[in-house]
Image (tube, rainbow, N blue to C red; front, side):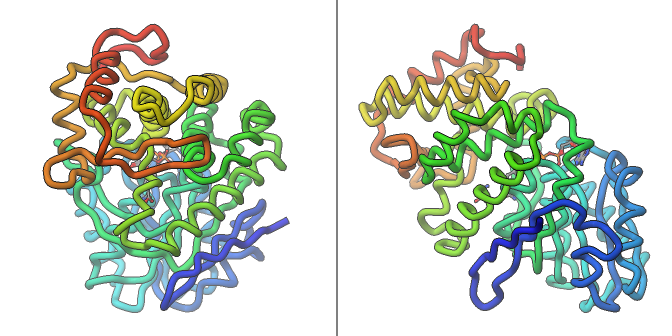
Length: 370
Ligand code: NAD
Ligand code: GLY
């Protein structure tokens, strides 16, 4: 069964189609593409598994070119982006061409940024193939690449024309990547959907066991949450910042560890727990709720603490993230489970205490050294 969630953005709303078999020849994609020139951006892990199916589905397009990039977060950088532009030139992609991102969040962010900037902007379809990309990164139009000194520092907003989340593709995703995607699902529960959080407390093992109904539920529910937030604040002038819960901590962990050792979702998971502990120290979140956050994240097989990173380094990296206001790090914290809040008025000592805690080898950190 296919479910469609609409992102109600003016002037161009777009659909997120979620379900099995959407990459099939007679499936969703063949109905969406016309006779325009298409550039498919993917990587060398995904290409052998799904590129043929995509080509078959794109039968009607005038010409389909591929750009197969090396796999990995460390390739999400300006040099790799140049390869997409080269491929666009090689395949004669004009203003009326279509870019397709086939892959996880790394491919989606890079192909999206290339689409935003090629000839000052061409249409994009996102075909997310990881849980993380299906619940988060393919929706909402944030695109970009990392800088060696900071995550996602170079980027643009560029909304896709459609998102096609074929849940069958998750069958080939490894367990670690599936768990990483769950971190973003837990995030929605924490910032605005306590019922989703409670559902996860009851059913997280069903998601980890890849029960189809459980996977579809978390993808649809997450997309509904993200679509609502993005529709209310596309350019993050206000409440969209709630989607960054755990991310300022997480991005610092990713940068400090060289974009290799920790997956994005793992770093976010540790960041969610760090935000919960700072919220508890500030007297906003009860100890019982903080414990529920840590317990669910641990049950999802995700880290509840960062690797040991010197406090000064962590602080400097958080400061260079995109969320400082007047030089002060703006934190997303929790007033309760289901109630995220954007805070400038936290006590510096509460943040410092959390960073100190992370600076020593933490017993609960699953992944070891930075
Ligand atoms: P990823 O794109 O690196 O994919 C994870 C791994 O899974 C890769 O090795 C990939 O090749 C492989 N893979 C992908 N699909 C597969 C499949 N179906 N079967 C087997 N292997 C498959 O990582 P991710 O977790 O999808 O995305 C993380 C990225 O997303 C980060 O760069 C993060 O900054 C970004 N992100 C962006 C947004 C946004 O709003 N734009 C939101 C959240 C995260
Ligand atoms: N992942 C954060 C956002 O899309 O705003």
